[in-house]
Image (tube, rainbow, N blue to C red):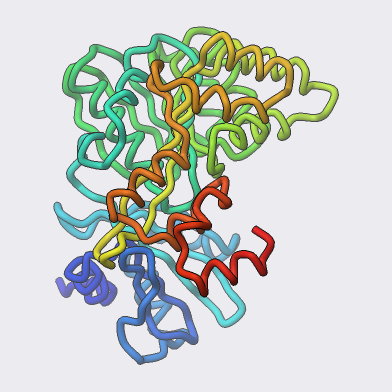
Length: 365
């Protein structure tokens, strides 16, 4: 049986150590390498070639769903060493797709550049732990590594609810049940509700994207489950604000009380380009819940969280800008990259070359 056409591009991106393949009707194929998009070849992809490539690696029922709805998420395995998270979409010129290469070997938190203190979240018995950051910042990889750490060291029943399933876990000390939306469960919320009847100890929610899912996650955390989830926020303060703001104003006081009681911590992460142009490094903000953190959440005074995090090093906390500064001092990232990703940009202005500093001042940052 001949190899699917699209495997040609999969081999190219794997050899280039790219993270993503982008193909779109009316454009040449491109890939993302170390955070930057670059072309693979000049040939423009036409409708016939796009349809042939996309249909070849997609189940007929899923393809029909895509044709009707215009979006589709699934996972595709080329071979034992190459698994992809796939998104099909319709755009102005026709079909398009993004294939993200998923590492088949789970790395340790240490090898990902995540502080060892994050392993403490795996010892907790209940509550809500959030891994946050922009798209492509490694949230899923971090949580998969944390799940693997628990699986290796503790006896738990871990349920993952994902769209699609990215990292495949084999049972070690724990039992791992992986459910894919919408194949094994209709939605994140339905999967979360079912966890309460499945004798689960830990549930991983691939994305907490709507009020219903967030509400059920808080309830599950309150009733004794340890809930891991992801949000697209850049730091702990924004994470707390997002969780509260998704609820109607009349419910927000009650939600702050629930969140103060159930939140165990936040790991916010960003990927910064290395100064030598070879790869990227991970920087983190880490917040553990303490009486002071809980009190601030209840009060709705999230602007005070930064001071608690900066002063919470004894508890294993870490402020994002402190980690960025550490990488800048070590020469791992450039001053401009540090400035662009920092929360308090003024702190990094003095390190910018004169022409960049002038631009930053003109921008009013």
